[in-house]
Image 1 (cartoon, rainbow, N blue to C red):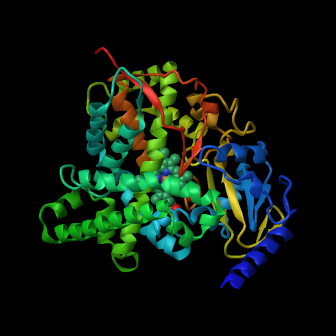
Image 2 (image 1 turned 90 degrees about the vertical axis):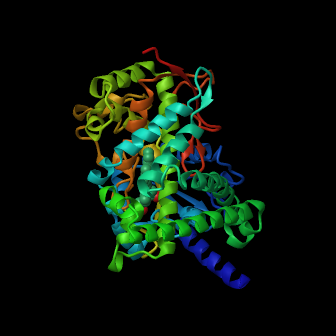
Image 3 (image 1 turned 90 degrees about the horizontal axis):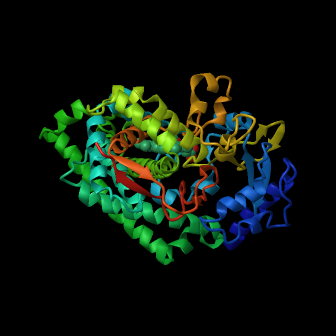
Length: 486
Ligand code: HEM
């Protein structure tokens, strides 16, 4: 067994070494490659360590950690080649295998024909016409955010916005009734979502814990397993109950016809598209994770930026007053909140929740920029770099929502802006995310002014980044919500 592992590792190592000089990169040590640059890294400093190696280069940079060869791809032309390439659609196992602890066989980590089938089964749940029917639920949950706000004193945005995202998702994707299961389900999901970044950073930074067996023996490994078991038990019971309700016609069927949710769509899929209960469970957990983590991160950045930029905040407020007035928010209003949309887009440019993605050519040797890249090379898509590339963005470090005005966007490379990724594996929830973000801003700003806290962090382009699953503010974002005089 040990011999087999050593041989496998040696073959990978020799392959990676043979390709050592394919592309320029920082100097490497024998065997270790660039591993020392990441040794002992934590979620708080891994971004800085990466930036030191990358040095703002728009060229492809080569990094090797032991036997793992990574090409850092930052130029939009190169990013497009990887994200559209038929050989490079698979998620890089070295980066995504720890996601599998939680998402198991969810869409985010699946590859090949299985991914295609599950993507096809879940896509109908995110059509615009269907999402528009949830607006009332988003409005109710945004009103809940207002009720929970702490006013007049610095407060963490995270717990409140996470609850908004979770409750909205539970109701719009799972049809969990507010007074029923939602209060029971949320602590279970919160547990797992909070354990995951710790699991992820511990396992990526410490090669000892790349082994599932060794990690499973740690306290964190056991805690994660126990939390997952609880979620799974709840999820499978929930799917079973939902199936019974739909079959028994106790109102659930009618509700599902009027406003079908992700779970209704999955339960009703037939033939090849039909998913087993276990597969459905994995999809629900992975959608929950993908949605809550990214939304919550974005809410934090948005409120932080608005607290610092009252000029931007006032323009959003004015637009909301002009478009919505005192009416209940409606999908037509959201479509007309154009400045608000530009503010969200600019936040996602400067502080993308996922600054990197990774793909791998797991299927065959690939020719990339004229070089033969060996099988199993990882391509690290540097979204952070593309979003700050001065060749594509004027004054890239400035927070300027109007750079997304039609006239100023003309001719910009499509792959210079990809907070939701692009190509066949782009984000399924991009439209959903926009609805949630616009709804929360349009509900909160007319009621509260968002003021800054005195933490010395005044420039969004140089906020520190804690890289767990997404790139967050270390310790969370704090602002002061001050009631507006009506
Ligand atoms: C600001 C919010 C969001 C951002 C910035 C974002 C970003 C992304 C990115 C960059 C990817 C590609 C990941 C990769 O290639 O590894 C992705 C995938 C995905 N996202 Fe989102 N996301 C957001 C919100 C959501 C929401 C609200 C949902 C669900 C309701 C969602 C569901 C998904 C799913 C299912 C995938 C996997 C798609 C596939 O592989 O086919 N996301 N997202």
